Image 1 (cartoon, one colour):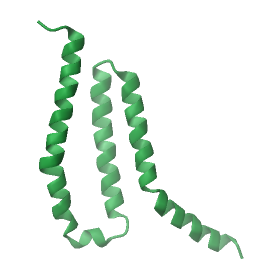
Image 2 (image 1 turned 90 degrees about the vertical axis):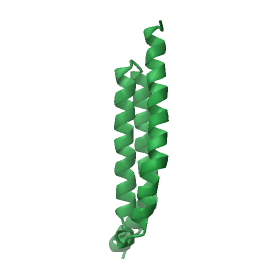
Image 3 (image 1 turned 90 degrees about the horizontal axis):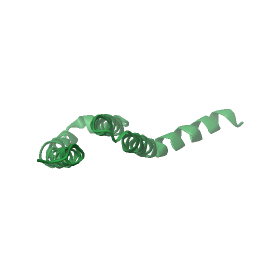
Image 4 (image 1 turned 135 degrees about the vertical axis):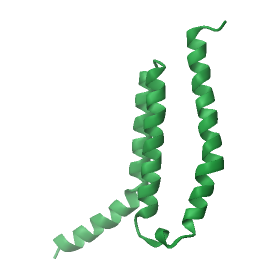
Amino acid sequence: MTSPALHRLLSIVFFFILCSFLMMQVVLPFWQKLRTFYLFDLPYLPLILGSSLLYLCSIIVSHLLEENDYGSIAFISHLAIKIWIVTLWLDELGQLLKQWEKLLVP
């Protein structure tokens, strides 16, 4: 018989193993196939899809961690994913700010 803390830890480990398997077998091949379509020629579509996928994974992981009484780790992981999403958009934000500067400065 296992202790409840060990059971929670094992469920988290198996969840991450399942997530990594699904990412390798389902999501990445789907992403590669999706890249062949003309939709990826749109300027912001890859960033929007990537950001939404990362945010969805972050919500799932933080919810699982909070259910298993790891609230602080859930908050840190969710915050880290938000920071990662912002860094994905920094190049586009820099280009936008340069265009605004051209409009504002005579």
